[in-house]
Image (cartoon, rainbow, N blue to C red; front, top):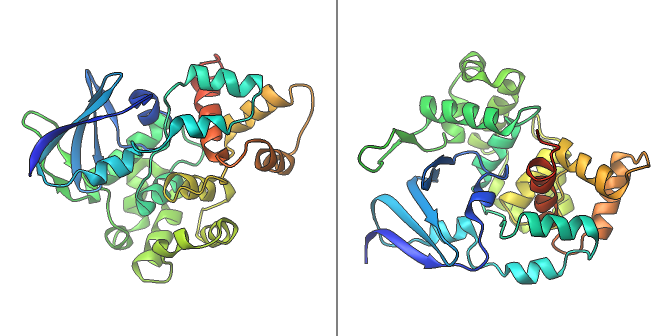
Length: 287
């Protein structure tokens, strides 16, 4: 049956924390809803303690794309039980209760994090929005809503110039995005196969792409492919690890990666997102 809106039950799902925690950059809060784009779908979401209601612009026969993206079937309580029983992790879980990891499209995730280097979340959102407006496919939206656009394909971006990309305010990231789009559009790099590789091999493959270092590769492995041993370390996670776990020591980045791999358990990537959101929004460090 095709429906334009649907409601599905959830337990311990913090939609606001999930959509604003720096995993994805297509969401805007327009009270009382979150409005965004997933693939070729404009969607409006609202939640309460037991459900999420979604509204599309056109009737939908299968909402699987949304539940997969939101990961509504994941066993959060089971994930949280694997976290280390230490004070920083307990505080992060309490402060960010119900935060989930999304499962994103690999190309959009990769491109977005290439654009994220040295930028704050609001700036990344602005760059991505401008890129989509200029080069993405227009989408149907609900009456009275602003225009919305799909994320541009690698083939579309491979046909634009570096100067045109720089006009989207992405600066030095433009040649990296252009080169990566060209490799993928030309079939020289296949994103689909990464999910079948061991995480170390998939990381090494991603780091061959222009502008992709360990942190961006780990973001893509975690947010697009669900590799839970991927533990992205950006300036916020670096601050969290040093302040919360090594407050009076100078610890190298390599040592922190080793610590994360051994300390946070089989769902280390999930633990990373709790630490990231906690240190950025709940401790005063982000102000």
